[in-house]
Length: 414
Image (cartoon, rainbow, N blue to C red; front, side):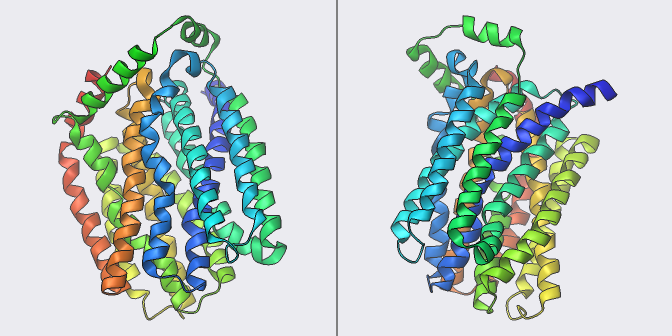
């Protein structure tokens, strides 16, 4: 057991570094931009619309098969390093102008960074599904979600905090350097020489790859397996909707970027990563279905305290507790969901299948943010929180068809 844990450490460390890096640009988009835009008197709708700059995360299904093509799959580590260095260079472009000087530049760079990060994710997810053993999967999903959340905190709350003390440009250069350094994690994730030789020997034509991709897509949309996609999209939709309104509400309550950033760093990091660990342990102990139900109930409960933040933003202790609960619920839910999605994925089509499933969740992030903004502008933020709670509760009903659908998906698209 000790030898197994020792041999797993480099692999898990490498995956941690890679997932951490891809979370940084999303943190800038999801955490930093909404606060800074709202301070510049942007509307709730414009703040919510920023989430659509992450559209490449939803469109990556169009090129996800690339991660399963034998010729590319055998060179996955080198490809990941190249994409990650390109991502680091892209983040450095933010330093050319401030957001106040050029929203167009920041929005464009954010979209390009999302393209690189989402493409990197295709290859990293494929590596994770193919290299993680059944015994490693729980810890692997904790590394996946925990590192990703830490990256988001570093890119969002970290930029809010350190940008104020070090200067925005210096903080952005630091983030770009961090992403470049994390690319070395690809060297620690190996698939074995026998597997690599088999992949290099296997040759397919472009037409054959298109046919394989189409076959996989059709298989995932069949009625008896469609419940997996429904769960992937709806499982976190309500929490995404409610959470998207929290920081704009704090800005309206007079909170500074520094206070929001500091609170998110101290509370968000501990609660989110702690939630990821709990989610990984829960999944390993009770299995996919029970873990999904338990985490789903927790997500619904976590939406309720958000209702009372409006009008009580001056109560720092209360807001801190609410934010901790929301981040913890998100960490638990994401880890459990991704572990279940990984279990429904066939290793031979790991990049494409897992991308389709995780993209459904990414699309729910954009949809939830947009719905939250529209409801808040049309009514108020409190109504948006109520709607998010109801959506989170309704999503639990989709879990009834999970077990047979996930088994059918895994077996029939092999």
